[in-house]
Length: 621
Image 1: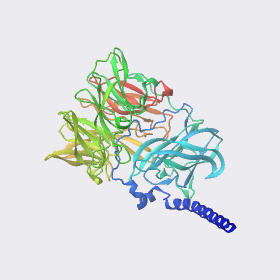
Image 2: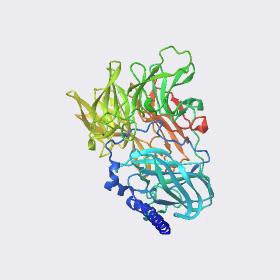
Image 3: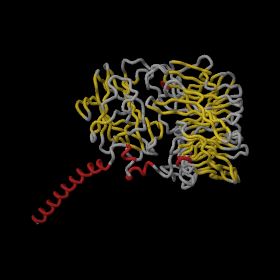
């Protein structure tokens, strides 16, 4: 019996030793097997496959429910140290799977750190969730002044040449009191929705304006590395941010969204023949998004919540809607059948008033799901919609199609429902993938924008023998928004161009000439855009006048600074309304009525919830 106990004890001891060896070895193997930089991962067969999935994402703007926004900062919160803007094209360093990255920052006075933002490279379809942070006196250690696990407010920025998504991550709610001096921000143990690697963007401090930058940066495995892209926010001695824009002159705020409206991150408006405005947003009764109406009545406007999405097969995060020939609203949303890429296939919906007369100002509309993609070669992840004169509905598919690179689909009314037909599948490469916008041209051809291996493209689809043939009419327009066309066949668009100084904005024209197209820049915005989505879509009226709204730092302010701002609503890229030293963050489609009055939304400012809910505004011609 003693021998048996002894053997059993030896077995337990051996097991414990072996378990200890396994526990000791596994992290080391995992850490050694994980590339320390994003470019190394892109060149590694074990990791590169996730960067080139069969269904690359669409390049269109994120929908309302998925685009994270923290709202307008407190008047006391400001950037107290900025280390240069996002680069997104050089390299990035791993901040999970055992790696720690430390960056120095310098404060010139006693300050309270309330948060920070930083830029990352993420795998397609993955969303950063949390990160462990600490502020210390030395890289990875020394005196610790504050630490914790932070929830990340995530915002999509761009897509780079290595097939990573570039994202901005924001951390708020900190309270770390520091005196003048140099400190280190350490990031590690980042988590993501898919459990993938996450990389902190390297920018070498280009464009930084704070004392002590470019920063000193280290990684626990590689040692000294290039400076990273981040800002420290807090309560310091810098001037407070400018006030929100307000009514004045030709601009009037016609709706300050309230808590009762349940609107979050409004995404532009469209207008019907009666002058009613319709918009989509996040929020709603189920926090899955909603569609609302703002109707003129007397000298004012009446707000109505038309429909709150339910999520799942009923949809969530609706895109901006269009008004159909039957006066119903049509749009696309997330949700639908969970059988595509990284999740749901999306859906196309319509909304119309109930069958009985409404006796109040707040009668809900009824949703009809017109089409739910099923996956495989189907045109899933639907985006922009347009009607033709026959009442057929066309749209972009960010993924799916015959090659898994996205498609253009047609929905035709049939036996009380709608029948889908894929009219063109993008082959990828220089011919494009992930279409982001669609326009039915005056000549019966389709025009739109897409990603490609050579940069973003403007494409044309021409009907030919019962099919459609693609022509790439221009390559390299930066990061484009939608297209519009005048009566002469000229195409117009707005695009963002990224560099070490941030994002710049330009308006461009493509003119048909002898069977080809001539590209010309017709507008370049002064200054730099702090966020690539602080610009509305481009609109055009029946007379060919172009309308756009832009808000970003004044040309004379520091990169990423917030002490001087300007905003403008423009006709033909000349100021129709101009405001200086104000925060003005327009987004989404603009609506133009028969009199040339312009309507739009901001996702921020307004009178309620500390100005973070947003507004609907009007500029009078």
